[in-house]
Amino acid sequence: MKPTIAAMFGFAVVLGASIGHAQQIDPHALYESKCGTCHVPHAGEFVGQSVMVDGTELIGKSTQIPVRTFLQTGHGRLSDSEIDTMMDHLETIQDSGQLFIRKCTICHGRAVVLSELNLIMKDGEPWGRYTGRKIEDFLQDHGRLTQDEIPIIMGAFVRQLVPADGVEN
Image (cartoon, rainbow, N blue to C red):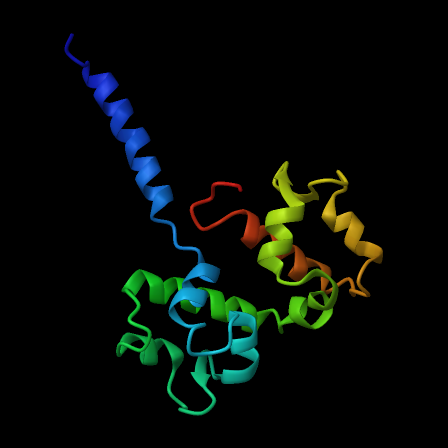
């Protein structure tokens, strides 16, 4: 029996979606495997210790070289897509003011681990996996967060739970 054009197209779409999802780069794993072996183990610590903002870009505190430029010259041996992923990750940490590290890590460890183990996406928002509570509501009186800080933490959770490919974990 010959496959129909529709069946072949359907297979190509499924295969393409699978390949696209498999190629998604996890910024945490990328940092830990390509950067954390020589630098501090986690990107949040690296941002706090080793980079600063100069105008609109991250630069190395010790080198004064833009981090993207440094990576593009071969430091870390990252591909172009890995550099884009890494820069997005480092910039997001910097833009958040390292809020999760300052206010949450002491009790909850790393955001990626907390999200993976304890949160789920439900109706487009983070919820407690075991408590069934909407996390945004829970944060109203948790962790001494201000009203301005809650959206930053929520954004961190959403980034952990919904990668760049848009497929909820």
